[in-house]
Length: 330
Ligand SMILES: NC(=O)c1ccc[n+]([C@@H]2O[C@H](COP(=O)([O-])OP(=O)(O)OC[C@H]3O[C@@H](n4cnc5c(N)ncnc54)[C@H](OP(=O)(O)O)[C@@H]3O)[C@@H](O)[C@H]2O)c1
Image (tube, rainbow, N blue to C red; front, side, top):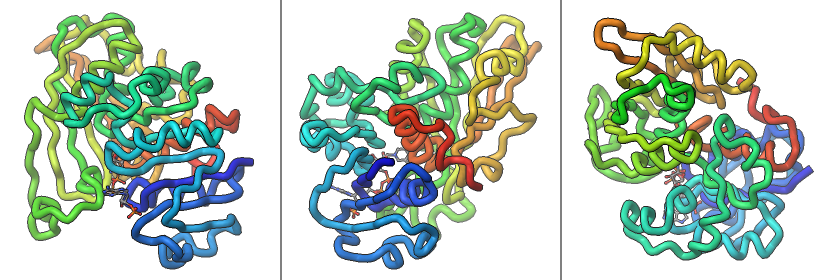
């Protein structure tokens, strides 16, 4: 059994509470929060009140239990990391603090990295690509939602040398919870309802993260042209990727790589409604003969496999629990 700490009560922090409340190996949950310090579960997350008998505390002070999930804006986890490790805790960071090299982090996030030595020990927490390394990690850099949905599509075809061009085109549609709990005009209901828009064209912060993870996993360097699109959904992410490729059936390649993966489903047509509130990634793919392109599509819940679900999956691997523990309830 483990005790866990969740730092941050925003969208991913809330989703962590939902998964952890149903986790049989978790006996105690501490939420470190500015907004809800001193409040009970019925006020913090009314939907979760009385769903389990686990001990729950919300506090304004840092408490580091066996596992600490940082569900906070970038900059926070790296300021706490050494103290978390000194307390003997495992750190699973949902922010970008441990996903890039120190110079890349400064370039894309505008902050000097607070602990570059620890950064080198962090493991990128995408189990389907890095499971063995994850099992030995003390710091997990939990992947971003766009990189998760993209890397799971690209990895098998890159690994098998089916993608030939070194430039890959990716478009990803995201619900607005992907931007976190912030009061900004663009995310107001009246602005986003009945609307769609691209943003951060060819300059999204997740692009270097995808390039780096793909290189770590396959040894190959790729250019990625990434187009994110904001769509009027509260959650869910649909990603498509296209690249010049050798003639091959992507479905067969996915099956070869993922047949034993508990959270990958190969389907005819991925849809966000089938993955929301789950840790699944649904995938499909086809070879476009006319253009010589591999065309691939994935669907995930940005708050599930794209954040909190994957973070719990990483904890399960490191603590030796069943990988699916706490993650299969729908
Ligand atoms: N949303 C997604 O789909 C998604 C997916 C993958 C990764 N991520 C990453 O996960 C992290 C958390 O994302 P989120 O969507 O949960 O964010 P969020 O909804 O904005 O919540 C962040 C929470 O962190 C706490 N916090 C502590 N210090 C803060 C500060 N200086 N400024 C603002 N909040 C502070 C706040 O909780 P208290 O008031 O309780 O202290 C806040 O509600 C981010 O780094 C994000 O990039 C998000």
